Length: 518
Image 1 (cartoon, rainbow, N blue to C red):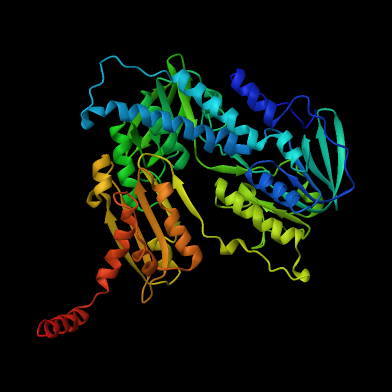
Image 2 (image 1 turned 60 degrees about the vertical axis):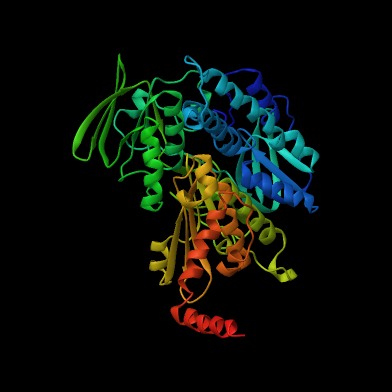
């Protein structure tokens, strides 16, 4: 059986046809290899695309291999489609609370879930041009549609729709990404389930939906589907939702999700699934009580499994484990000629993390240290992230517990949005900004924001931390009024106020008294 399979994207409408024509054109002819490549990249997700295009722009000879859809998870089954649906769900949620703003919407107003999904597919197809095979060819990359496998010390075999190609490389980059992990739940395979790789093919809203896993993917989609009217049961093995976030941050989102109609079954144990005539029947023990739930669909969002199979990694001495390909801080694998970037080797399963890692691969793979170039290190990355629920939860740097484990003494300051004018006026005053400042300095070592636009607002802290600027810089930065981003400065002002000592105040009081005497 061929290792190469032609992908199918459902539904087969004009939008998905345009998507496939861009990122996996059926008439694509793989080029003849042009001698020895400076770098061959396996996988055309974010990490692979960025590695290939930067290398080509620098004048390197580059080959890029993709067996499925260029753009990877982000474009096809991740960031892009999910945010399209989330935005539509937020519009519907805003409409339902319009009376709070003095707006009276006539009874009987409806949404069209099919149109929501069609809009998502249309926008995804539009964006897909950026990741298209033809665009990358025009940028100087040799694009190979097919399955890539290491065949020798410096060769990669590409099995494509019209035959095989053998590519020779000086350096290679493994950017093959990851896929949805499957939990060992009895009966799940037999009953059938959705993941982020299949849920965006839906054209009808599931009236009843079970979501397994209350991490970012599970929470985002559980809230969106609940807002459209699905009866959503969110099942999580740990307590509450978003177990990696501060508990009070996650609690704010949890309360909003409950208001949106999500039923949370946390501390879930002994989950079992059985297919019945009435639907997919789940049993779960939550906080010592057994629940019996029947749904139409089950969505699994319990993490990612790295795509290491079929790459021939053993052939070239590249070590890997269940977490993915093993790399050092320069993103070099156990084979010094071969590097890796993105979900295949990173604990940060984010598009922006893959982008940053790709740039490290370029610097280290194409510009060796003996030529005078400094090594780039993944350890130097300042990595923000965001869960795009409503409100959003965004974070960068250390949590307070992380700082304690590292032996870093911090002072923590939290400013609530219900004291920020713009948040009050917007009706979006549930949330806060929290900063962790290293004791005895003004160095910001971490920050968390809970707000409707937290993902946009966290970047201010990311820039400060990357630049080595501290709380004093932010305290002296003018923010336009009224904006929700003022909460960042107000949090820092708590630190400044805390360090305005009574002794300093006493000296100033005496100074001002002397000045009054003329």
